[in-house]
Length: 88
Image (cartoon, rainbow, N blue to C red; front, side, top):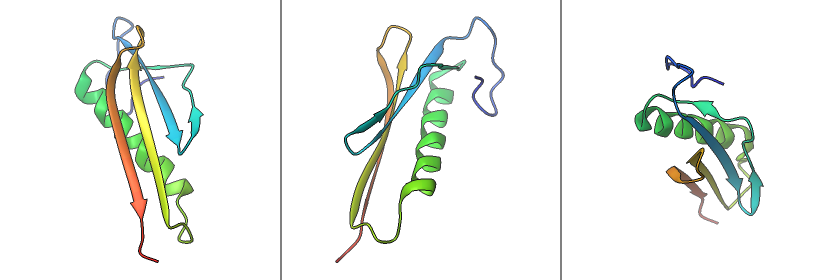
């Protein structure tokens, strides 16, 4: 998969974007080619906002979502976290 807005080449490194919703892990087994760490951070942020849009309801008091980007060697390249909370 190619990160949106990015020109990718076969030589670009591949990154895996794992999503966490509380204690649930949604592991990325396909990966996405990104030509820079800036693109990795942008893609992680885009994924996190999409997950938040689709999954946070007005009835929840608190929820934490996170996307971790790791390279092919499993090293963490970016970690983006969103914590939602509202007053009771």
